[in-house]
Amino acid sequence: MTSVLFCKHGGLIMPVTSGQEKCVEDNVVTDISEETGGGKGISKKALRVLMELEILDNYSFEKGYLVIEDGKLIGIKPHLAGDGFVTVGFGDCLREGDLEFYMAPERVSRISGPLSDKVSEYDRIKDTVIPVDICFEKLIQDVSPLYEKAKTDFEEKGLILSQNQLDALCIIKYQCYTIGDEAFNEILGDCDRVALYNDILEKHGKNGNFEYRTNIEMNIFFGDGSDESYETERGLSDIIVEPLEEYYEK
Image 1 (cartoon, one colour):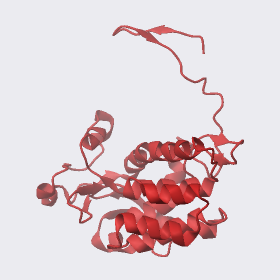
Image 2: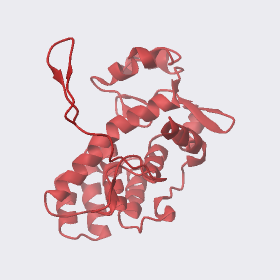
Image 3: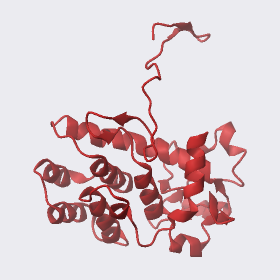
């Protein structure tokens, strides 16, 4: 931790962590926090739920968005979610700066076709295939700060949430960008399921699959952390299990 390197562009390079405290368990993607009884990162079970809610379902399969080989997902094609944006990967709605991630030299050479964030160019990019590990890498990049924000927001109020509660809030934040002040206050006030469910729907409406998604999130938040509480009825998690495991073996 006391080591220092000189940067050829100027300045000093100093470590911010020793890297000796990381502990990876079967169901957790990042560090474990023993004091709080929960992880510092979203669990693998929650990641699978999020992937199922965003793209891994029969609708996406029937539409041809999923590229499957030998029963496993190997890539995902761009699709339109009906919100006026192009969506790629696991619910990554392309916005300013997102394309830079995919266009990085180490990734763009592996993407089979052009990409664009313009809906008007969808016909040109609709058959582009993005390898699943790139899609997953972007999901982790996008979901990690949301998890940390949810965790920090409640810890600042002196409230420590369990892993399944943080998982649920992270999924809600990823899908809606926020759980809303009303839902936040309900949680602080030791809310019940009906109150939180109604607050989230009041904030974001009931269009499309939103009621279905919100029920899944509530099952996780108010569940006991068991596999059953993370189940989705319409998902295709079996096609992502192996790629997910392979990603963490790298």
